[in-house]
Image 1 (cartoon, rainbow, N blue to C red):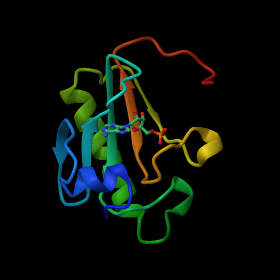
Image 2 (cartoon, rainbow, N blue to C red; image 1 turned 45 degrees about the vertical axis):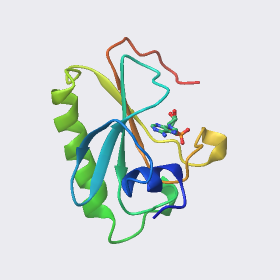
Image 3 (cartoon, helix red, strand yellow; image 1 turned 135 degrees about the vertical axis):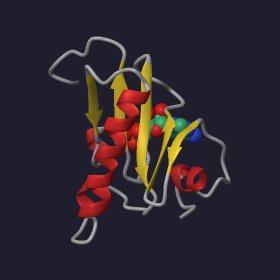
Image 4 (cartoon, rainbow, N blue to C red; image 1 turned 45 degrees about the horizontal axis):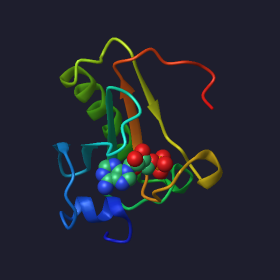
Length: 113
Ligand code: AMP
């Protein structure tokens, strides 16, 4: 569980600005926010990349999305927000513990870089 920064946050070895936690996932604010609201929703299970989810993970991945919608309400961004998963280094992933970025509070451009 402690092999990445996010494993250490989950195990409370490292501090973070935690905004939600339950038995399946945790959410905390990104330390380097790219929007007025930017938090990460992280399954507790140490899945490295989105590409590494497997049969049996459907429930937790679905649950993460219900948590995202609840937190979007809580954070006041429910009208417009973006969810991003970088899967793999070339896609921009730097922490190899699956996490869902949630951005809001500003206009988003498309396509992403
Ligand atoms: P990614 O590049 O998709 O793997 O995203 C990793 C994200 O984790 C980046 O947006 C970082 O700013 C963020 N991050 C790294 N360390 C921490 C930390 N200790 N607490 C909160 N967010 C972090």
